[in-house]
Image 1 (cartoon, rainbow, N blue to C red):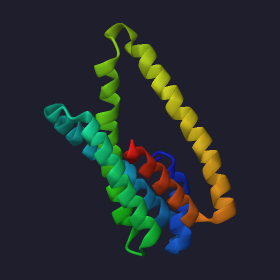
Image 2 (image 1 turned 180 degrees about the vertical axis):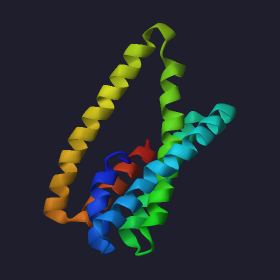
Image 3 (image 1 turned 30 degrees about the vertical axis):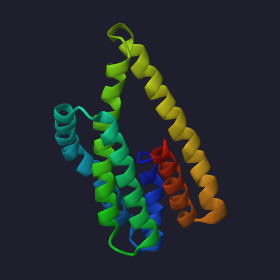
Image 4 (image 1 turned 60 degrees about the vertical axis):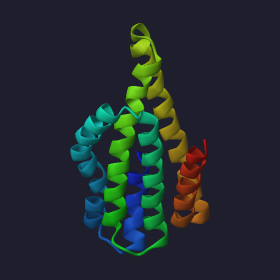
Length: 156
């Protein structure tokens, strides 16, 4: 969910916060800028704690918080996007290593390829669905969709 948000968030920032396209791009880029620096740190922490599933659930909960800030408050969107960047780092650092923990080494290439394919299929389908949600209900409905989707992941 975090990966597809930046495309939709740019226009969301322009509409909700009356940002120029340049300002919206700057806010939008915070997710990846934070992730670039936070990912190695979270990777180190996940390696030291070994609690990957806990970190995955934590990242989902933090992403719910970030989307809630963007959807229901008018505080600066920098807070939501920076929090989302940390959550994205936490997820990537804890989720991808799980593949190596459960798949035999001789099948890792295939397993990572399948994971990447499923992720890309999900990004494509959810992006199309998000466009329909925006057209029919607006950006608040899209944020509610993301929050609902993430909440369903925490329930499992």
